Length: 277
Image (cartoon, rainbow, N blue to C red; front, side, top):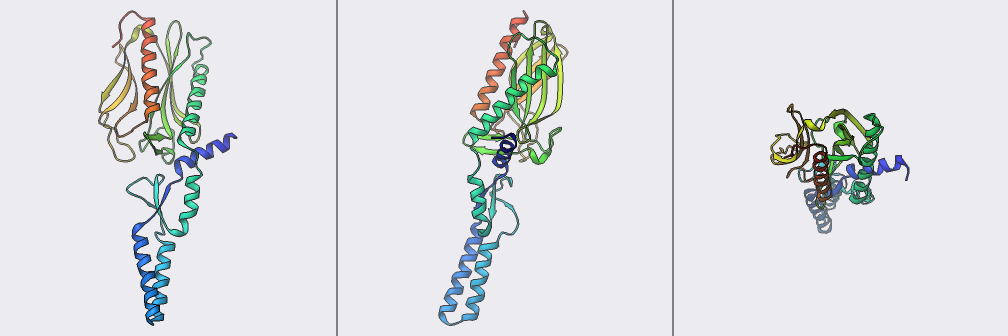
């Protein structure tokens, strides 16, 4: 598959909505068409034709405008007219599955990890980089068009189009880090940050459960977020929200986050004598 075809498949995964026939339209249109047929059979042909035509028009063409279903975002599920339903159903069913999109995401994260060493100007490191990833689903994400910040429901939660990626590179004398917002639909990073920390200045590497009060695009607030936090003596923090009951990042992403935090904590401990929290 070409790069362009992969990006298109990812876009379709996030943007092709589940089509749903509006029950009200079916009931009203069906009743009108049925009454029209009854009127025609009983002899009132003119009324029967008008009622049948009106019912058929309602069934075929309403709703005329795009309508999100069940309070969902428009990319998740939409009420569609019968005329538009079959094509939308075929589009939805033609999407790649969530496992394939997750596999592509992991490939992209590996690419970002490798590129981070060059961005940081590191010629030699003491181990493979460690990547901490958290979903982004705010109305505003630095460097990423809001229309591209999407999510889709999967069996164990949601799969997101946009992530906050933090890569940690280990050298003999310092801990380098690269941070960026990454959009899977475009395959681009934005709002990049880099820095170096002396190991002696790192005082805590841990996961916290805290309220950030951040508001998602869905209107939900992050009240009990599982957050990766690396804190320095000066009080600076590198934070990544890994999950929250409102985020529901999924088992795979949660497992990756926990593994990354444990590995970073273990590596930092090797380079300093002060125990980490």
